[in-house]
Length: 110
Length: 283
Image (tube, rainbow over all chains, first blue to last red; front, top):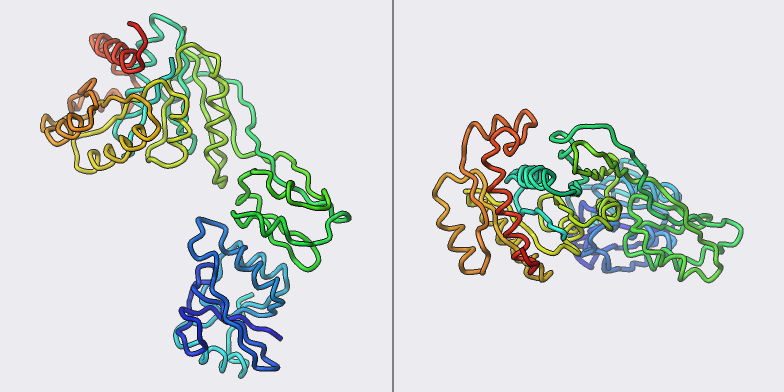
């Protein structure tokens, strides 16, 4: 199962990013194999509609869960409709968030 | 002759100028006043009366679930994020759609057709002899002012003498209002904020190549910075309205300066003559 973490940088030790649609990077981790893919957010400078665009990016990559600080209304609607679970994480690195996710310690928000 | 009344800063007196100019002109010839401040139109407060309303709609896409094979091209094309293609269906965010029609063009299956969605209204009334008032009103929650402004302006398209009252700011609604105008009055006030935003608005009219003049409203008599700016940028100061409590009282009860103090009609007639000069129309 693939899980997406929003990040300020491209690597797993980067700080996590609280925003979803305007996160600088999406770090997508395959929980089963441990494979990590880092995707630079192409919509970060977009004028509007970046939430659904970012959600589409996750849907297209078969992501099944998102770990982020805050997810806006339109993005949330798209993610929920796509069956992507949303978990809240603030502060710390993507690595920390991944560890908490593996321990099932994160709060579900959608 | 189409005259736009605009400003950068809100609350400088655009509607005061537009209402009094329209009122004065209506005494001599038919005039149409278009309230293009569709998020908060207020000219009907000066000119109340029954009107006829019609809906403004924009086309948004709908998806034929049989023909659609979820290829995702419409979602990729939409730069506004209005379309998300899920594994089993297409999700539309109609409030993000700008009605460009691009999704229909890129759909290889012909699975997209447009249908109208209401975003506001346009009301036409005849509040006083010689005046037609067109009021655009954006529905609460709808983010797209531009199509409502376009619809309001369209109702006055064939009228010979039209005043457009713009929304404040210098973004799309203001530009849509000014588009096609023969000249523009920029209303400012004796404050640093008023001057700052006048500079922005002057940039826009310059870029749109619309001849413009300036009205200084609520002048406290210390307008040197504004006068300097206007001189440097070849902007004629066409009228100065002093700061006067009585004017504020008239305005605040929905009154018209030119009706209650008729000596001001001459000033507004001179302002109109100035507009014609700006637009290059013979007096």
